Length: 433
Image 1 (cartoon, rainbow, N blue to C red):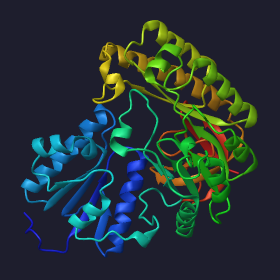
Image 2 (spheres, one colour; image 1 turned 45 degrees about the horizontal axis):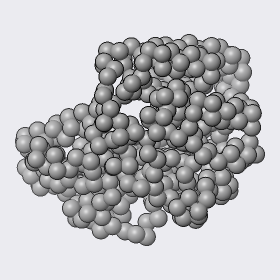
Image 3 (cartoon, rainbow, N blue to C red; image 1 turned 90 degrees about the vertical axis):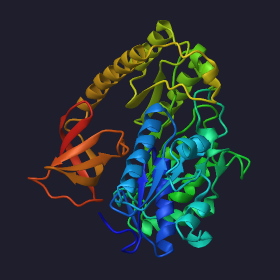
């Protein structure tokens, strides 16, 4: 057993949940480094900071298990202190203090200065978002706003992240320049809702103007957009996407469902007709665009007829990328007042059916890529393969392009032209041109 405080403190930051949490952990680590603290990400350290997720049941369970695991390590003398921050802590702090009192201190999503003080560090306002990136050096998640004003019935994010708050364009440009100087070539724009950007500070939807500012940053080669909301989508974004080579022809737009009954209950502010019209606008304005969406199955009141409507629509739309979730009944959301009436086994059956359909669609679309050449970036080496992505793919959630490392040598972060020689449902195999 190690002797407590026998060496200089090393702070280990553990990140759970989505890309927004990754960004927050990176900012925390940047602040700690600026305070001359020894900080690592998911490595050994005698002080542990757990950045939790509280979005749905599985994420909450993972967060609680991670906290308990580190409390056991603390009791065993392997680590000295455990701090908890992030969405779970924001949402359930009183309950967590009562149920897991051995945590040294809990912090919410907006309490970074207080967390830093507990770690004997000062919050440095002059840092302008500098952070220690934990992703491969060639890309970084780039948060343009915090919080959300949307009233979606199933979502607890406003409870954990608060109201929408945009970051000014000039501040974001400076962040992008700092990342580019550190070797980042791809910015993945994230927010609870990208399309709401600017309404609070510029009194208009200003995502297009932000994109036009970011494309001027030297060293940035790709700008990718995640998490756009369909209602009120600013179509001038499509013109920027079409005219600016740096803006990827890619859009992540969670649609959640297509039945008018379910959309109304979800409080999505749109209809099946409007949704289909919007998707047609995307494909008309930007031919070849890659559309990623996500869906929820098993929402309260989703009948077999509603599910069949969703299933048929997925087949018809042939989304390039699609993810699916089973409904999670979340406290203090509008949908929690409804009866969670779809059995868990049926939710899982519907999930599997949607993903089986998408797997077949993805396989068919990928077969058409065989023999074609695409510009790709190399993210990493894994086993006998270099792993890359095309403009059509985002890290961790989309297709990967695999190149035999026994035959070819490629550099991490390098952009190369690759010819597809074989295709599976979610993996492509390629060789350099």
